[in-house]
Every structure is written in C-alpha cells, then in structure tokens.
Image (cartoon, rainbow, N blue to C red; front, side, top):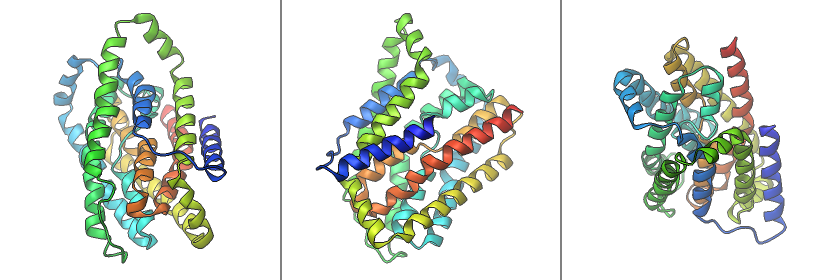
Length: 310
C-alpha cells in the first residue's frame, strides 16, 4: 500500500509541476515532516532511557562506524563506477542519512528493542548536521574526479541548522506537551500508520511538484541512460548494505536488531528534501537514485521483516 502511495504521490506532483509553474521550495515542508513523521515516534522517548546508551555503548559505536564510515565509502565506490557526479552525490546522500520515518515500524514489527531504537532515531537526527557536512566534503573532494566544479550555492550549513530545529527541536518540544494529553496520544498512536502514509503522500506531491524537479525532464531527454544507471546502482547499494549489516549485527539480540534496521533503511524523505534543495549544486540527476530508493527500500524491508519473523 505504501509503495503504491509513493508512486502515486510522485506521479501527481510531477504532473502538476509539469503542467503549471510548480511549487517554490519552503522549509515549512521540513516542519510538516517533523510533526507528522518524527513527533509521533518521540512519545515513548524517556530521559531515563539515556542509560541504555552507556549500557550498549559498543553497539552504538559499531552502528556509528558502519553508518558514517563504511556505508559512505560504499556509496563513493559505487558512485565512482557510475561516472555520474549527480548520481554519485545522490547515493552518498542516502548513505549518510540513517533510519527514517518508517524505521520504528520495522523495529517493532520484527521484535527489536523499541526503546533503544527510539534513542538511535534521535541520535541519527542529531547527526543530520554531520551528514550535510559530509555531503559538502564529498562535493569538495570528488567534483574534480567527475570533471565538475563545486560551490556550496545551497549554503548547506544554514540548511543544517534549519533541519536541526524543524526536524528535532520543534517535534521534541511538541511531543513533551502532547504526552500529557492521553486521549490525543492514544488517537495518534491508533492512526499512526495512516498519518505516516498520508504525510509521505503529501510530501511527495509537494517535492515532485517543485519547479526544480522539472529539470528531470531534461535528464530524460538528453541523458536517458542515467535512469538505468541509477536503478542498478541503487539495487547494488541496498544489496551491499543488507549483506554487510547481516555480518556486523547479531540479529538474535533485540538491541542489535534495532541497530540493524537503522543501517538497512535510509531516511529517503529527508534525502529527497535535501536533494531538491541541492539540484543547482550537484545536478538534477541527483534526485533519480533517491526516487528509486523509495521503490527498492520498501520491498527490501518487507522481505527482511518476513525473514526475521521466521
């Protein structure tokens, strides 16, 4: 169902943008995503759970090294093979954004430790600034390899500060107030999956309806081979992640199972927001691997969940 909504939302947005002037990007979409996708996940975050970080400090360190060292290196390797600066940038962006709006659903469904999973979600959101710094460094050091020039025209530093406030600070503060309204919390928890799906649907319509997204038409007209290159590179990226995560984590442990999901899933919606904001820096084709990530990650997660539940 979610995959259908993803495709439908992207299609509706693109058709609207193609037949009109399109939307103008606004950071308010980050606030909307924070309140509808992130905030409901924070209801069960307790300050006392912080002690889990010390108890599982080695697991935390293992996850950080995998998500912010090995996966970016993997993305760089695959990206260099594509010979496309924009596709390589899109893959790299996916590699530095761990978890995502659906990660807690998969952790809970597969019997992982949800308390530890919530902490990892919060930490990964705190690392968004680091992720954007890494994307900036990717542009600085690898643009020349692809025969491109790099200038931070998107001002990733300011964008990181905005993301930090809209996706972390505001949702967390709002969640601290809402947890005292028990009927509202129960209502949100009951319909959380519907809220999540509708939110993603609206976000995709908006992002694919942006004026900048229409540059994909030029990519299809002049460089259609980038579509196929993106598809195969994203499949290779996800297959490699799953195999690597199976080696790194002990899936018999609920805590390691939670960390596992934070590695095999990427924060695609946030990646799409950042990529639409970065088109002028890295190229329109940067969005293509992130689009395919929606189509690939969801079926992968369903298959992995079935295997874990067995």
